[in-house]
Length: 152
Image: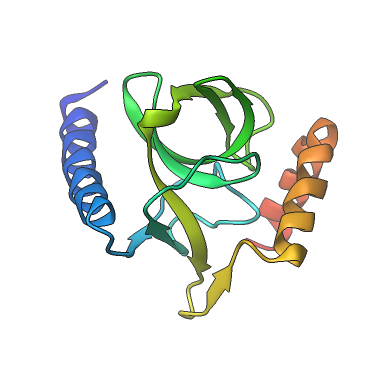
C-alpha cells in the first residue's frame, strides 16, 4: 500500500472512530459511504447511512464493523455462529469478512440518498428485497453488470 493510501486510511479510521464514540453515547450519526460493495442498496459516493448504537446482531442487519482485525466496513450480516459474525457486501459476488459481535460498532437504520431522502431499512419491503437479493447471489455478477452500466 502506498503512503497516500495508508495515510488516507488512517484519516478515515480516525473519522470513523469519532463517529463510533458519538454512537456509543446514543447519538445517531449520518455517515457518507464510499465504494460499491453495497450496491444496489447503498451507492457509494452518493448515499449516506444513519448509524445507531447496535443491539443484538441479527441476520440481514447492515452494520459498521471492524473486520479481519484491520479495517472498517459497512456490510450485511449473512451468518452468525456463536460469537462470530459473517459479513458480506450486497454488491460482492464472493468474499466474506468475519468479526466478533463486540466488533460491531453501529447498526445502519436508514439510507440517505443523494437528494436527502431517508429510506428506513427495517421495513417489510426493504427486508424482502434484501432477502431476495441474497438468494440471487449465483447471478449477482450479471445483475450488477447491468445495474452499473445502465443505472449508474
